[in-house]
Image (cartoon, rainbow, N blue to C red; front, side, top):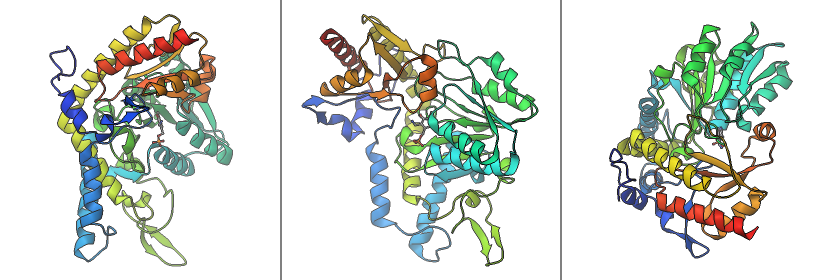
Length: 413
Ligand code: PMP
């Protein structure tokens, strides 16, 4: 089955769906329709197989092992780092730090950067549409160091106000930390332009790429971004592994985040010297099996092609917005000109939780609530939304089912 009616989309959705065993299961006797991809994506068989294979045939702790298995496991782990480097076009694999996910990556940076470069009265710029993961670490730093947080406002369509952004810079601004794509609104922020603005003020930028990495080509060198965070599980990889990319010249200057094995060069009770990049930031046994799974997932995505995936998801999004828009009482939250495959909505006065629960009974998995973005909910004047978020394996037929389901729920109220 071709992806859609667009002749430019050549990827075979039926074949792709067959790679994801979970998509053929039923819930409540109905075929599963999985529209909660913004929270986590499903895993293709090749990712799970790679994890199982490594546990069964290669497992050994990595680095410094003299024995065969340890060296093989190390080669796999460091090979995975190189796969990530290639995927995001970092200059060197020393710029790829493995973390538990986006959240840990942002915490790492807020801690280390804050330790080295921020003092009382300094400022960080974030935006109205940040996930809690890109708010709370800065608040913890604020409590520790007395820094202040400035927030870029947005318009009612869910687009950041770039003129206002520019006005937030002062001689105390030390870093900008912004989402690439909003997990609620689907807005694709013009991060390349925003990075250039920050650099014109001599300020580095962290981009939270949790929602962009599965949906669009990201190129660290082209963006000229200083730091970039993402999670493996949102890009068809396993849970518990993610990445903090950082420009080497920045990472070299930052102090470690956690202490322990792996991150040291030598230790005495008097003094410890730290390991070189990227190990300085990777205390303890890394999730070397998870990194294998992540690399497999990125290879899987690359083989299909992010351009194909993006085109298919764009088509699904346009179709869903149009079809859902025909439902009486439909209100979209997030109608930015540049939007990814995340659709947040409310219907009449129906509580999102009721909508989500009733859709679930029809086999349709959506997410409801504040989506870890309470300040954004406050800006929108609502408590929560229903969110449908699409991935490469979703189809127009599934969207038809969603539209029918939403309309059915509407009629019940
Ligand atoms: N930022 C954004 C924009 C997200 O959507 C998410 C996950 N919902 C995160 C950060 C946090 O990611 P994780 O829980 O994988 O660390």
